[in-house]
Image 1: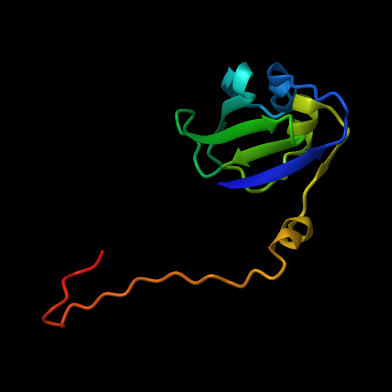
Image 2: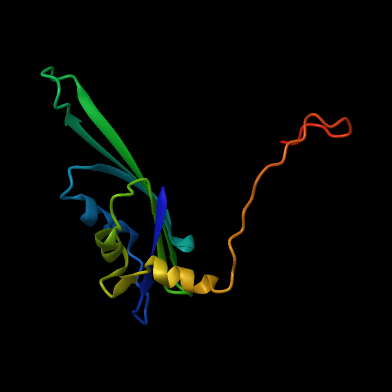
Length: 137
């Protein structure tokens, strides 16, 4: 799963979680969504089914699910979309939910905030042959 972030430029942020259906209506998906309007949160599960290309039996179908978790932060005017569909930046979904006056944060914008932050490397150290050490997990 990966997350994309959109900056909203409208002075009055418009949150329309019910408009997610506009994004999926032309894509042959069945969707189910649950939201929390007070927290500006929307969870969408989309399912697509199609016949398998390698079989002639009608009962053989390929079913794929996609998960979308959408969060709007109106104070910072940011829209976060976390999705199992990594092949898209979800521009049209964002436009359906908050309008067209948005722009996608790219990695250059994100890494600007990490100026003078050096790469942190984490690793495990396991000392199992030392008599005073135990396994460290």
